[in-house]
Length: 93
Image (cartoon, rainbow, N blue to C red):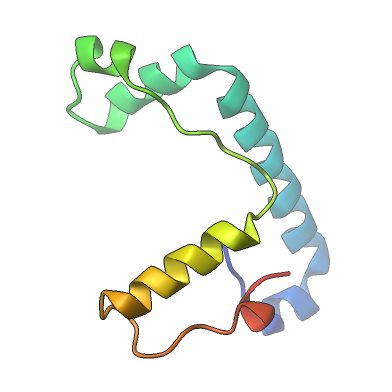
């Protein structure tokens, strides 16, 4: 997920809209081109081609899975990474 400030969203809503659309397009592309994703990984990691070829890649959904975000927030509190649960209503669209 990506976040922006209220100030930027108010000042340049077209930029925020175009960024969001570009991200959705890139996620859909990555989701449907796993071999290209594996090749790209070689450009910025030291993962060998043999390992990249057998990697199980994640899905890249364009929509936020609120239940998943809530589970991560709960775990962050449980594991002491956060002291209080974040207010997802304020963080998520």
